Amino acid sequence: DIQMTQSPSSLSASVGDRVTITCRASQGISNYLAWFQQKPGKAPKSLIYAASSLQSGVPSKFSGSGSGTDFTLTISSLQPEDFATYYCQQYNSYPWTFGQGTKVEIK
Amino acid sequence: QVQLQESGPGLVKPSETLSLTCTVSGGSVSSGSYYWSWIRQPPGKGLEWIGYIYYSGSTNYNPSLKSRVTISVDTSKNQFSLKLSSVTAADTAVYYCAGGLGYWGQGTLVTVSS
Image (cartoon, rainbow over all chains, first blue to last red; front, side, top):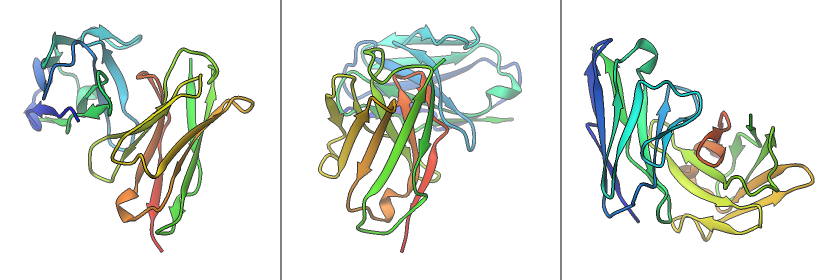
């Protein structure tokens, strides 16, 4: 299985901050990477697919980059509604696997 | 806009079979647009992909669960289903159905307990 490792596991940030979350794959996955946002008690929401393509309706403050083994999710200006847990997922190889999550909290 | 809704028992006894159904609206399980997946999340933990079924009927399962999992599709009802046999407390989780990467159901909590 491909292991997906996110860093950090949690972070504290202020409204307006620029936040970057990293996801590393244990082997190359080309650009077959997705990012999800999950709020407590809710289903994950798809933000980005193919490493850098924004899902329809997702604000442009979210952006993704990377290819191969190293990927990033950036939130350009953190807003109150962005405090959540973020997951990366690879869909290059079976089984599809998720990172352990990064919890973004209010400082 | 594709919408998905999980349904099924919220409580299953150990050693029995967990059965869930996902009803799709706004899209067709018969189209080739999406892989129809099941994902689960134990309380307080991360996400685990269980498997998917494609419109052709082909399936792909997580090897960690493969011996116990069956995913099937009912095109007449526009639904797909999950069966997980011989459950234990470790199978207690919120179970989500999803269409592709973009569309998720709200999730349903299944507790395995006697």
